[in-house]
Image 1: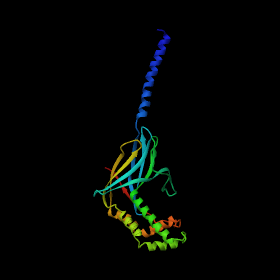
Image 2: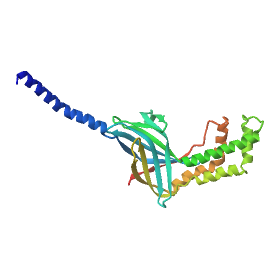
Image 3: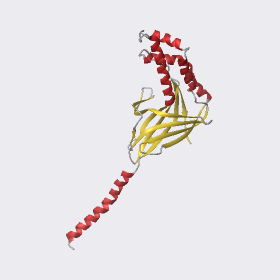
Image 4: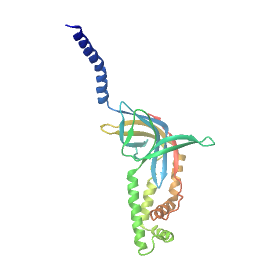
Length: 268
């Protein structure tokens, strides 16, 4: 066997020895499934706005092995009495920049992402504020508001839809009607949060993954904090008037600010 042939054999064996781990690494990477990593910021914010309870969760998320696609998030909020509500994500804000104003107060800039598909990467964790809402309540509320608008349109008949005072007068008349009372009943029933201990379970749905990622926490709501949320129930008439006038493009630029409570959460 000539020297040249031996050189070729050694080269082939050497190449195979080098390619094997590289090829194995490539194949392993291809078949590795992404893994989402979630980091909470230790608090949750509950807000009462237009009679609907919503929650805001500050967090950061990244992926391990490969990039991932998040297709859903929901919160299961269970009171110590076993009453449970489910809130689904409706808005996601990604923090893009942190600066401080002249007094040293931090200011954040963000871009809003519509939930549906949220891309999570391996190279950098996304700093997010995820907002959750009671979709069942919002559907009921919207249906009743539309019915109220239909009643207003019926009573306006041939009158101008740009007359804010006339619409306010019709709203005053409708306060005696069942449609207005139905919205009030729904509004009063919306504050189902109670004081006491809670368990919180965050579920994250990843595309092509059968089971959800689950993160469990506990928190407590004090009676005084419930009263803060309850204060918003006292401005029902003002909120309905504001809502209706805005649907007719006649509403004021100012809105009654929502009531919120900021609570500490701890892992279970």
